[in-house]
Image 1 (cartoon, helix red, strand yellow):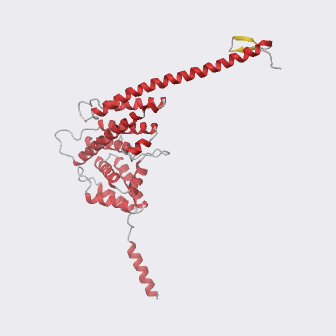
Image 2 (cartoon, rainbow, N blue to C red):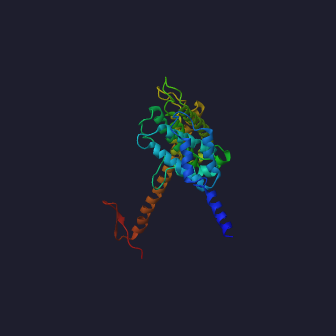
Image 3 (spheres, rainbow, N blue to C red):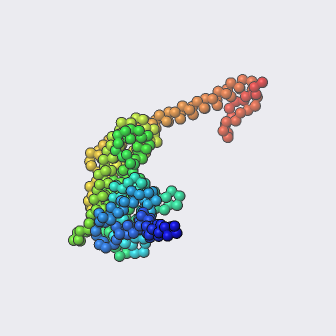
Length: 338
């Protein structure tokens, strides 16, 4: 009997291994392998990406461990002299996981990457990523890709669904239009993929391709929201109309020519023209709502003034105590009602 118990105990100890699948150690190891510095211009391999995606098919704890491992890896890559190759591989891998990963994995990545409302912690705040031993081009793309990913994470999920758009309140629809306009504007300020004469960098070109996909998606979603807002323009309040005009002006700016040293296509001219026409109509709504509100204020203030004048006039028939209006004006005398 004792021998049977010893065999069961030995079997259980041997089966546990050093770490359970999906543990924090496994997550850090998988992230380190997928984002190794060498070779510095190569994308994460398909084999390593499959290993990362597998964390989304386990428990919530395994998905959270992977998200935490990416945050630690980004923080380490941005410290000291900086390692742009590692940081850019992390950002490219995160885009793949957010697009192809299971819901539980995407949920944990969003929670880990978005700016914390209380502490202000933001793993994607890499605008001052150090050059250090990295090339200027790679470091520039780290800064740009981190900012673009930060904006993409704020976009709605059901972005182009017609029923979803119809159900949105006016302020929410304007806010989403502003969010997609911010993505389009960020892409316009992307650095060049590579300086002339340098060897091709597959990692930077992949970041370039992802940015172009974001621009196309933003353009499509801006177009459908401009069209939807045109259908409900007459229902806007003054505040909503003013906000819409400001957002549409930003959309119009996307059609202007970019900097001469690097030409990235702006928004389609048809989208910009539709935004311009809607902005002109929205300005008319602002004018009408302003006139209407002024009339209401004038009517309300006029009624109040009449009430203040008529009351003393009715009471002034019997004489009595003086009533003072303002600091230096006297208006008749009134007596107390008996």
